Image (cartoon, rainbow, N blue to C red; front, side, top):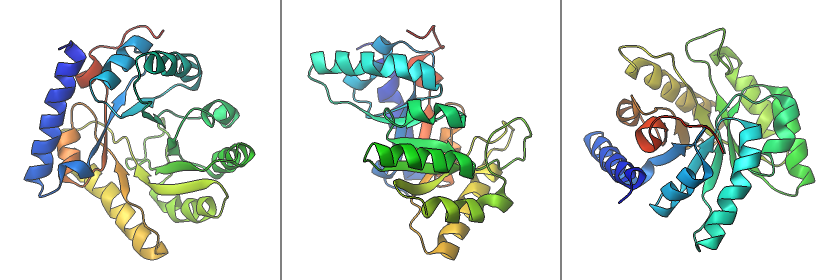
Length: 235
């Protein structure tokens, strides 16, 4: 087995164990392989090992890499993964993201929602989105403030061609991550209760803390280094 295949198998075991400790089903937690600055060949290797969901952070890198990945997958008779956009997104880059990705996890303002909606309508498709929340009020980090969440949700779900599926956060690293993860879960639960909407997705947790995130209800964990190893030069 390749190093990536070995890493993926180990991660799946850890996800299953964390879910079991939390009294949850393994299948309710999706592992997303974060492939920023990894080669197309590494992504194909992970998919060949069974990875079904892939995340990218940079629109221009994805525009170059994803077609290469898809071509290599087709040549090997492998199915394409589900693609997640995980990086901060400028409004003018929505044109690059809309054709390539199944889900944008970093929707944090209305003008971006409006542009994604317009682009998705033009392509005759519906795109899943997650609302990114800045749970720690970090000025340098993207994400809507918790106090803005209700208004952003209501405005976004009124737009055509976007399906709001839940919330996402990248909390500030700290000794105790559980409180931040619990806060995002509470925000999701409160929003779902107030709006009557089904919001099944909680995207939180990365290589160093995904087991804690699963204990607090994560349904998507975003794993880069623990799967692919150190970041290489994008190809």
